[in-house]
Length: 256
Length: 381
Image (cartoon, rainbow over all chains, first blue to last red; front, side, top):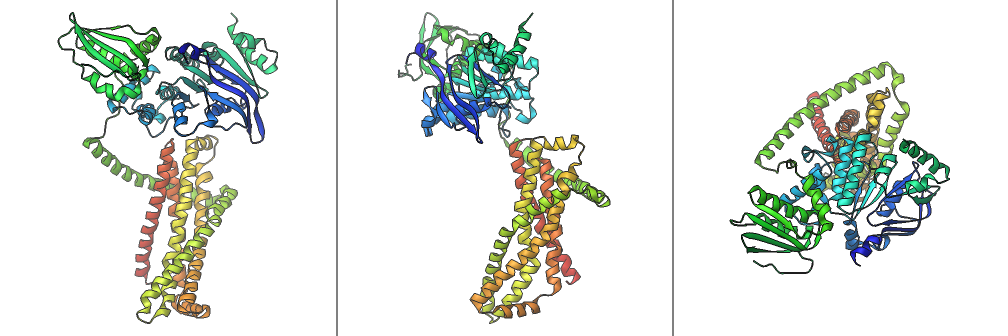
């Protein structure tokens, strides 16, 4: 497949996904294509299953029905080395960073390299330092433990770890939740810049209207167990009450 | 100098012409190739040349590691006063190279020191200091518990009865199957080994004396205490440590609850009330195991066993074993809860403190048992 064709291809293809948790249906036959090179944001009320959708795509949650294809592979059919080969092509930033508590930030960033590549320690130290400055962490953060970092720094460190293996696909679970508006805006800019320079496809779950405006190419709204996909402009016209109310805040923000 | 040209493998060659040193690179400059490329590029020698051209035209794939290798080479040469000019860089790599080049201009990231003799000595020193501080803090914790216990005795309504009953069920009732089984087996083993030795003197019947004194004075109580330390001491440390991790302890504190009253006293009193009962149960199961062995192996009938036992043990033998149980229970509860509170806010710390709680409480239980033995023998009991 040529590069040009790959660019047009879908990085994630979800068809008829059904998710049931404790007898409760969270996703009712939803379809979604995430195109290569775009940033797609999923919004929805608390408990609507946004994070579960992300977890289903990366294989942490078994769907009750439907197909999920990631980077051209159906996750269900993969095991062993084939699964690992797919897993090194994506990076996931969990809500609170999910850093390994007994490792320093530098070691956290090096862990994927240590597992999946055979590099001299000196080079790994250099790569860790490149990654950390890329996500805007101060130099002295490298030797610190996650418990010594603020929430925003933990997210940046988690992002550095997610990016370590040069993924094609980046998953962000509420990247700006718990950050002050200034840090959140900085994080949005960072994600946008890295997405462009590293040519990433980004799938993110968020609540943050600022993040939506600053970063997303398309938005998928999860309401009534279904997905509605569109842009900010098209979704603002949607008659559904929840969507209407959600984007009403948006109209207030954008009005002069 | 020529390197073999393989498709997708990273290759490079060097040329020299018109006073310019040319480094031509191509193939896949990705992390899989870095182990091979890293030392070569570190040792790259451009001789007396002041101008270096890096020709990137043949690069097929480039990731952060590969881009960093080239950028690092460029910077190293520039520091030596060599002018470096990258040429034929594919526009699709511009953004990546720019990001790395732009972002990483700051001072190099400070990395933690590698292990050395000095850091080893430092660790030993820290360990010793830690052990002393541990003891100091345990004494402080002991004081706090005693104070709160007295306060609770003075105002009994402060005692959380529901929590206490729950803890008694957890630490006492739920431990009976495993305590019973293990004590029964210890009784069996003890009777077998004892009868083997005593048979040489034709004194098999004294197996009963050995069993009675051994189980009632020492083994029953120790078995129960060691199992309680493994089951309940570890549970205390892990529960409280995890509660600390998820800020539940903080929530209890700011809501105006007394942490000691809510979390520690029910656990401590629960295990202190149930361990004597567990010890009694353990004693009985040990004797039953011994009696079964005596019956099947030595042919001592149950009435004969009981008769012999009556002659061998006095009330004191039994009470010496049981009276130690609340002390053991106090040690287990204190150490378990203390380690729970000491855990830091990460998963491995909770695990480490749980292990330490079990090891320390078993150590202290056996040490206390030794002290009891000396005291009882001085008292002539």
